Length: 68
Image 1 (cartoon, rainbow, N blue to C red):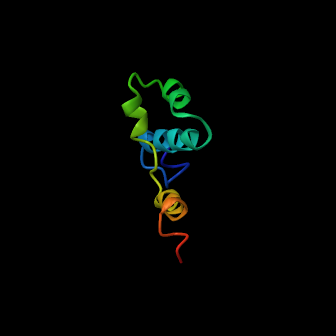
Image 2: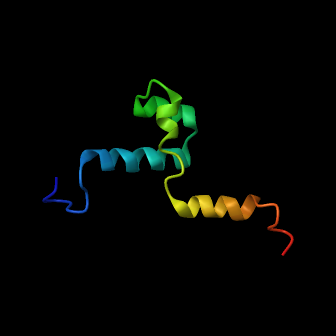
């Protein structure tokens, strides 16, 4: 795998990417089932990995956003 895709360090990195992308398009319970997680808390660890998504939500929901 490292020879064909040198940017991928290990299979865990692929799993992280796939589950994170699923969370963008499916609800939490669906992703829990698809990932094979017994507990929803296991799936929740994959949510909001990227800072840009958090920044967008903060800007959208911040109470002082409309004041300026």
